Each structure stands twice: as structure tokens, then as C-alpha cells.
Length: 250
Length: 250
Image 1: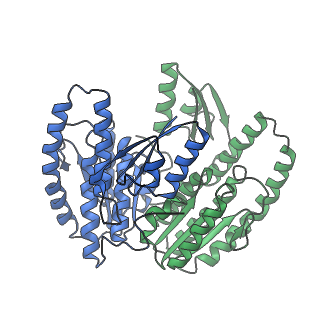
Image 2 (image 1 turned 30 degrees about the vertical axis):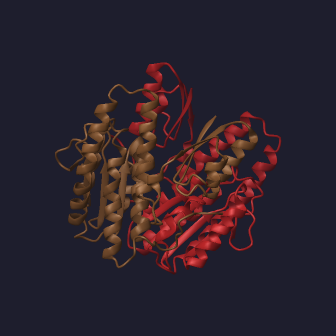
């Protein structure tokens, strides 16, 4: 088996323990992805991918998450010699420049209201992005947030929605039509609903032209800005969240 | 591949669609678990396990979830001719009789306070039970609830904890010591924390003597009672949750 161990500090206990187990059992080899070349994780793994750019002072992972995610994605694409690599790189850079101001405008507009709960929905690879988004907002602004698979949300979790809920739907390619219906149902209940998709009329358009796997990282600045500015609005320090430390050890 | 499709009504769109796909591709066979012998799911699956006892009028699955979970577990044990089957059945019946009043007493005591968020934590097989518990309370009482892997909770989600949070830790066998430390950290933050384990001093004891896989179902009545009585306290009808229907169709 081939394992990927991802840890900004390279010292997260659970990841280091998993790596040590894989090493001593001899049943797998470990590739670590980290910002720290001299960490326990990096020094003991068979292979290491070090992202210098992933270093950050903030307790909450933002720059480190997006740079490691994009770096690993690019690495995989390079491995399989993707024919459209030059085009992908070009679209990626163009979209990067644009998405930060889009996300900031949305945040400014959306923060005019207070919300009792903020919910992120995503399908397939976007489910992970929905979880990370909910986590960022929770960590920075000490808010109540949730993440669910988009269609799963209809099977129960939406029971708590009302006019004080904000739902952000991260639109995929593979289930786009069904997801738009879920957004419509959420609006009928009376909750606030923002849809972020690649090319979309009634919502926020990323406009990258990239498929759902390649554009994953562009959904993140919305939650990152939202958490940051909501924290400031609530009188909290987004760089020093409550109850957290930079490196988590058992 | 062998698929299990579980649906109380046997009409849940996603499960029926998955079953039809498995049938037409010819690449897998489908065992359905349902309360309705004449449902689309049951009629089109290769094999069907019908739990008559799983029928219920309530929109929120409670009786149906626990009876199907226990039934499937017993079925698996029977298949592998477990040597302690008689003992397990005996312990199971004894614990069943006892757990309902334990859960009811805990609910009555805990509901004396209001909470802004209720969090359920579980590891391994208990993570699923934590998710189901959070869902029950959300559905019945329109409350804000979350579920996380117990150790994962330390990696960020706990940022939102304060004196108005209730955390319920479902204690496993395999990570018991680490989980008890997580509970201790939660108490230090000042949040309310209940630990439910099989044999435990500082918390609620199920006392079944069964391992973590066999006693899964006994963690459920706590969330089920809590959701039910919290709904009544908030003036809601737990049998008719907001924004939900009994059968979910696309």
C-alpha cells in the first residue's frame, strides 16, 4: 500500500503514528506532504514533498491548505503527462487572480446579516471542500457550522433550516442538475442560499473552465474570507482561535 | 460486488437508483434491507431482508433504525456461527430492558439546561452512531447539532465550544484512553460533557459486557429521547419535523 501523510507541521501525532506503523510493519510506503523538511514526518517517510509556501504563522490552516492541495494536484497531473497541461496552468493563473476579489465581494455582502448556522454542501470531491470550508469558518469565527453531502442534506439535516440559516452549495459537474434543485428547495424554506459553480447564472461563477477536480481549490477563498471577516466583526482574533493550538499532539 | 441497500420505505430514490444500476450493469448483486416487502427496492433486489418491526408512523427514523441495525448485526453473527451466540442474546435482552430508563433519566437531567449546540463524538463504528445521533436531535427538535470523529474534534471543530455547548462522547473499546482525554479537555474548556461507555466510572455506563460492535445500538436511545423531549420543550411536534417528509424522492 502507498500512504500519503499530510501535515503542515509534520508533527501531528496521528499522522506520525500512522507513518511509524506503516514503516515498522513493512507493509506500505509513506509519502509525506508537509511544510517542514526537518519534521519527524518528513525525516522518517520514504519520500517527502515539501511545500515551502505552505508555512504560515496563523493557527488556522488557509494558505497551507490551498497550496498543498494545488501542489499535489499539479504533481499528479505531471505524473500522468496531461496533454492540456499548459492550458490548465494558464486557466489556473487567470482564475487565481480573479477569484480573490469575487470571494471578498461576496463576503462583504453576505456579512451584512448575522446567521445562527452556516452550512456548506458538496458532492464527490467537493464534499471534502465543504468539510474544510465549514471547519475554517468554525475555527476562525467560533461559529456553528456544518457540512453535508448535497443530496444527503434532503434526508434530514435540513430540518433545522430557517430564515437565519446560510447555506452555501458548492456545485459539481457530475450532479449539477440535482444540486441546483436542492438549492431551490432551500430557498423555498426561506433560508439564505448561495450557489458557487463554475459557470452559473443564479449564483457565483468561478469561470475557470476547469473540471470539478481541477478547480477544487477555488471554492476555498469564500469560506476563508467569510471566517476571517466574521471573526473580526464578532470581536475575535482570527489568527488566534479559541481552544486551539497550531500543532495538535496526543 | 455485493451491495446492501437500506431503506425503511424501500422507495428512497438514491437507493433504488443504485440498485437498478447494479442490476443492469450485471456487476453486482443487491441485498435490500427494508420494512416494506412490496417496495420497489425489495421487488427488484436479488435478496431481501424484511423487518416488519421497522415500520413506524414517525417521519424521523428511530424504531426502524435500531431494529434494522440490530437485525443485520444478528444476521451476520448467525452466518459466522458465533460460539457465544446464546450469551450475546441473553446480554442483549438484559441490556435492552435497562438502557431505556438510563437514557430517559439522563435526558431529563440534561434538558434542565438549554444548549446552543449539541455535539456527538465517536470513533470507528461509533462514528456512524455519532452521526445518526446528531441527525436524530436535529430532525426532531430543529436543533443545531454536529458529529465528529472523537480525536478529529481536537483538530479544529472544538474552536466553537463554550459553556453553552453539550458534547456527548460515545466511548469505544479500541481508543478508550485517548477518548477519555478528549472528554477531559472538553470539560477544561467549560463545556458540558457526557461520556457514554460500556463500563465507566465518570459517566453513563451501558454495562452490557458486549464489545463495541455488538453494543452499537445501545448508544442510540440517548439521542432519540433527547431529541424527542427537547422538541416538546421547544413547542415542536417530534413526529412532524420541519422541512421533512417520510420518504425522500428526487
